[in-house]
Amino acid sequence: MTFWEYLSYRREYLVYETGQHALLVFASVLMAAVLGVLIGAVVWRSRRASAIAVAVTSGLFTVPSLALMTLLLPLLGLGWATSLTALVIYSLLPIVRNTVAGLRAVDPALIEAARGMGLGGVRTMLRVELPLAWPVILAGIRVATQLAMGIAAIAAYVAGPGLGNRIFTGLQRLGSVNALNDALAGTLGVVLLALLFDAGFVVLRRLTTSRGIRA
Image (cartoon, rainbow, N blue to C red; front, top):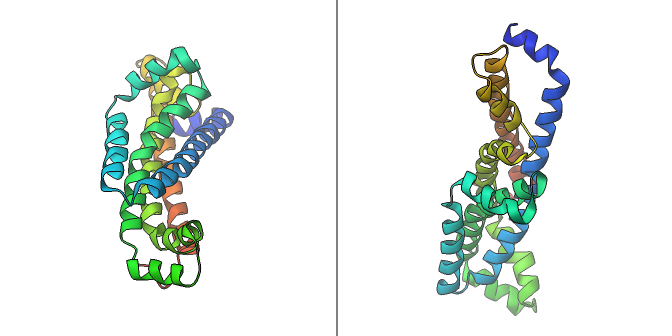
């Protein structure tokens, strides 16, 4: 069976696994973005606190993915929970780091002007600091998404959803009928999804960034 015949024959399975892979990455990065931006917004003013936050997320990032997922298994079991938790952990570093960097790059004079107009700390953060830091924060989320896209394939090791199942199946059956097609379809699917997500970030940046600060 040729690769194109294989794609036609397995179309429904591939579409389903692609959707599951995209959903896993989207959900994990969204959760990591909320948590990472919150952490960055809390610690960025303190050099010590921000250094600790970055160091902790860096340390978690260095844990091999298979080892981390294996350690999570007794707590969360097979499937979505372990896969999602692992991806959130791996996605935190670039988001926290870029949130801190973005907020530190905001002109202090603009912050003082906002406070001079009667805005409190929270309103200044939401209406001035975060919007100005958004391009840098979004770049961190974009990097986190690409990292999660690849690591999500390894989640098949813990019965996670997505195209990793197709890759693992192909590698385990290498030499048998359609084994190479399985691995190739899964790999190309991950690459295609990564390109689509990245294109989405380009559009999102243009839609959510003020012209005055757009690079």
